[in-house]
Image (tube, rainbow, N blue to C red; front, side, top):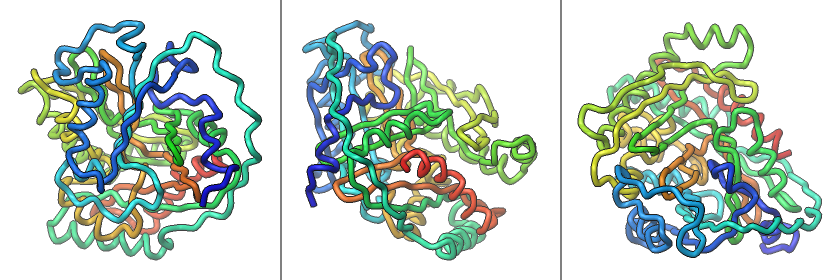
Length: 394
């Protein structure tokens, strides 16, 4: 239902997408846009690479990036790229899962230029009201899914699977101030928003899916969570279960990068470092590699999407179990969102992410399941992750 006080009002407010360079913040003007849904057919990764090339951002050989410049053809300074979890699964050759609960595209590219004029002051936003959250599954159903994954691990089908739940709430008013608050949460390395006709995505992710700078590929998988207390940090550092789960995903990410890296160049620069996001401690590692000659954006997306820390190992087998167990699609969450410049790529993994369509606000949260997982603990961990997101939106 289209109402003048909801998502149609989105363009009134100036917002910046995640990972936009500091020199571009508050100065972006949209020059061109391309969006993709499965009904459109074709290869969205190849289409995205070609669309960017058509607008002066050539990403066919990431080992030889273009020289940075203040302005490019048609004053193009860069682009935002969004790839949903379902689109990432399709790129990887895996099961896409349940349908997207939000009415938004699965891939979007927005090309921006600069404006030297001060942005116009937005009209006062319509009063914001957020209704009651409706969960996609009950705690009991979530726990049963954890148990099902443990059985699959016991049978040797998979080693680890990430399970994600969803919730939605009706709203009225302009959602962009709420999404902006979300993007400003402490520790949000990829804080920001991306808007489109009838939809918006807000992100507060701390996790790097893939960064490409000066011929180097970098991913920073996050796996392992505890409350941000002294005891929580000590517990995370000494947890054999969390460390085993984390290292399993680091190995998966090493293998993903090896597919698109110069032979023998993959290395782990930082293993199981504890970082803070809002009221949580999380374990993060840094994996790097040298870009292989001739690697283009499309092949890079096929190699790293969807992120291993939100799928599991082996990735394709994990996607099969996710598709069978999760009742609602992952939508904007567990995908990729970030910035593409002429000389670099910086995409965050869309954890701690919300999406808005014409009817509802959508959020997602979950965690990695291993043989040692306790169903009640996994349900509690997902709740802890979504609490700051819902509070910011409220």
